[in-house]
Image (cartoon, rainbow, N blue to C red; front, side, top):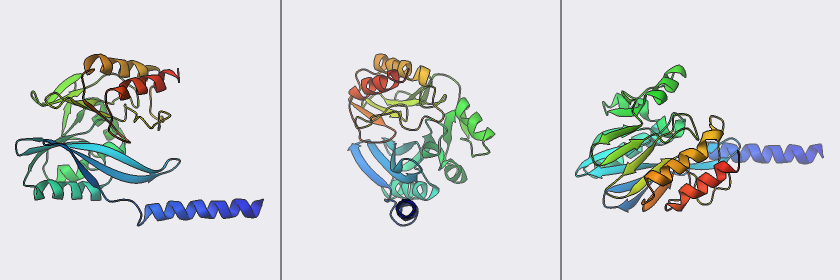
Length: 240
């Protein structure tokens, strides 16, 4: 039995090491429509294996806005290079909560004098952890990163106490970040910083406010429709 366990441990360690080195997929960029692109980065996470992480590039004319940075500085550099190669001008970014899959590129964006935004709560958490903060913060539950184009809304705690979502009213696209679970998800994922008691209520708030969404994008997993809000509500309610 000890020999079997040792072999399994070595196999697991080798798989983790492989993911940590050469087999992490490259940053992916997918066109959702003429003005919105999905960027997806990857990381090997203890207890979860290889995990994808979604963010957006939102175009308003020739101006580009980033919703959540990729999961590493290297992928953030690649994202900026791609945006600039398309001839777009990067006007700013917003992070939807404090976890690394949303904020890992903030310091790099700051170094390039690109305006970065996060809620006051997110910046406070980042500061207390000794991590780079966004250069701009907002305190209202409803904040327009760009008037009439990109709305940032706080529906209440859930995945974390500071999670916000991003609404694109012209495209009727809701970026739910890690508050919203993909259709294929059977649990709430990482709940280390979650407020389980408030999660289903936050999902209900989104259902009421953005029930006409055509696309809903979770922080991890496949893009879906408005049914992801009910799916998330049910997953969270089951944990109460």
